[in-house]
Amino acid sequence: MKFLHAADVHLDSPLDGLERYEGAPVEQLRGATRQALKSLVELAIQQRVDFVIIAGDVYDGDWRDYNTGLFFASQMGELNRAGIPVFLIKGNHDAASQVSKALRLPDRVHVFAHNRPETVPLPELEVALHGQSYAERAVTEDLSRGYPAPVPGWFNIGVLHTSATGREGHENYAPCTVEGLRAKGYDYWALGHVHQREILCEDPWIVFPGNLQGRHIRETGGKGCTLVTVERGAITQVRHHDLDVLRWGEVLCDLSGVRDFDAAMAKVRQSLSAHLEAGEDLPWALRMRCTGTTPAHAPLVLKREQFVAECRALAADLSANTVWIEKVKLQTRAPAAATSSLEDRADALGDLLRFLRDAPVNDALLADLAGDLADLNQKLPGDLNEGPEPLRLDQPATIAALLPEVEALLTSRLLNQEAS
Image (cartoon, rainbow, N blue to C red; front, side, top):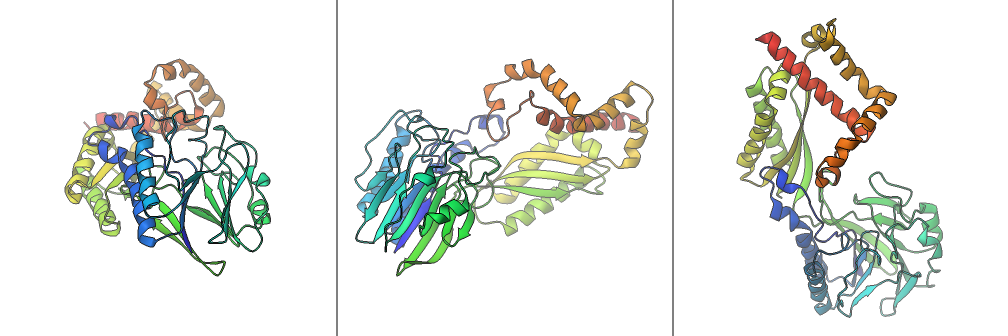
């Protein structure tokens, strides 16, 4: 027996604000979740699996129109025609309260009830699946406690959308423990909600497969599903399959010691070339992180827009337009000898530089600045306050992260003036 375990499809997940990024492959990014779902269906048919499990968040909230639901129904129809049943639960994003529209799905697609735990028996395989969908977006109780006892002598699978013991970047929904899941006596736990693949236990197997397709820079690396093989009632193989059609990643470029702008670009070329040689043959959305202490710090900061544009042009040239630079994080610093004279100044500029240097570790000051900027934050465009990295000027942590950039820009301008 074989089955596929997937989760967090987030079909047609909105990618608001992409138009602000020059050269962003908008249509390719927006279509990626659909292509990943198609790849899941193709893999299931190719592997002749006995069934497919989707552990929550097929959708990303209510549909803009029926096309999202129609596409999912059409893909489930492909599995139905291949004789492959699908068992899915609704998670926090597609809970009964979150998706108001509905379409009839093919006969072999079973959606677990949201008002109680449910067991679905497969007598021909001697398999029992246990699961419960979300009724509301925020489920704070441990749903697994109410799951029924395993069917004796059968292979038992628990399907659960959960944060488990808590994961950074994920709401703490349907929390549970490994010990609690093990105590149920099931043979496999098919989890969803956490977008990074993770195996919590191998006795029994308790698995987060991760999402099918990375949607932003916080979802880096290969994404896909888990193929499970069972022989004589025991799991013999648990294997990850990448299904993503566009991958997010980060390239670190150490600019320590480079003398000028051109030398920095040569280093960027080396870093991008190394990534392309080592990376898989997929379109990439990359973040370039430039670090190091360098005399080129001032010209790079002052010509930031040009530097970013040249990084993007270089990536497009080296990759034949299959790599897009999502963002360039310029985190270089000027040599200490160059900045010491500025920070030791006894005038207002010296005071300002010392303030910017010390402010990120002054909690009271950061709280005051956040309060002062709260009104401004409300006037920002909506998409700046949303997404994986919202610009929340009313949050002390955001201000603490921005102040070093302000210091870098001011220092660079002063150094440039002194040099001229």
